[in-house]
Length: 515
Image 1 (cartoon, rainbow, N blue to C red):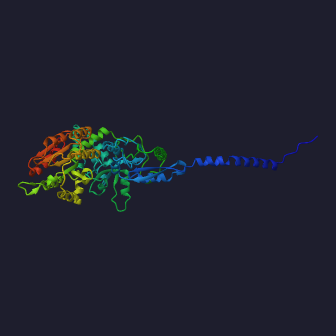
Image 2: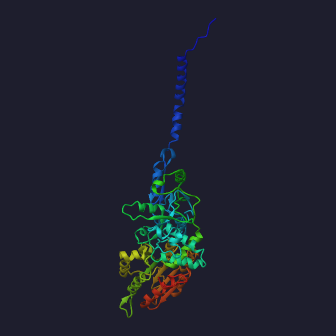
């Protein structure tokens, strides 16, 4: 009888190792391939344009990404919301994601014609709106500090530009709603802070004020600045919209960018380190913006402050070189002098931009920008506006390209339309359309009709001077936009007609008066 041989432990061990070696040899490449497949060799780049207040927090979160595993990288560009909104008017070069300070900016972008921007986004951070108070003894809550009859000297920034100031304005209206005459109480509460409001929110910290609205983050940053006078934060006793930093993926983003943007949003919402940047975690239950209430509030603000946004369009055709009888000067010189005096009719916060036009003034275009939009205060401080306007006296040449210019100016003013202001296109000319290559009058009127929006009025003030003006032509253009035409046969009367036009249009009931 042959007994079976006993297999020793070393033999078993060697056998196992042999089998594993063969498996590794056969399947090793497949395993390696599978592992490599989980690593990304061509990650998508997600460009995010964010408000400066939140951009550092986003950049910090982006640094913790595993680009190889997640297959996307994030680039953050810090940019003020108004600048981003202006860039979004042009489709080219848009970011994949926009994170402004507040949902307010999304609504304003859409009101400016950027329809591809969503109305709302997903909050990735939050900073409550507080009152910065110099002396807490002057009030313990918002109603005592800024409500009707408050003794503290309060200030505010332009609520159409600063979401914290907008929240304060909404709170003021809320306080007034409990009064016997809410409308009168609203005006009485807003008027003290509207007299000399700041164009930029940062300027409030340098003014001699007892109280003003700001974000919790901005106040903490101020208080941590060496040498700065410490201010106390007073939270609102009633819910007010905070800075909610909405994250919106723009429709122009490619498929890979969109996928990466959605992954980064999930990464942010899962626990980004916000506290070290003075921000709080997002609160989806925080007070939101009631757009109807916001629109109405800003209309009241616009009526009280009478700030406007005026795109001026000045005729520089050759006929403007004609000497006006009894004056010894040209039509052009008179028009320029009227425009200079017109600056004095506007409040410092009014935004002014200026174009000139004739024919083929800028390549095939009949028009060209002279002065970009800026406040009257800034124009006068720099002296550029007056200098550029005066320089046009030497440029009169060519024919009158009225139709193409009017349409282009109206389209531009529609794109940059601002809530809370009286938006106007003011066209000054001494003739009628003389460009044979332009659109027809019928085409112009049809296009103007398509651009009308009752929620966003944009009238044309047509100012005509001299015997060559086609009154019917200017009247039709103005009427198509809800505006008015003002004409004078005698160019020497341009100053009076210019003042009449502005004083009529730059007002809102019940206080129709020149700015």
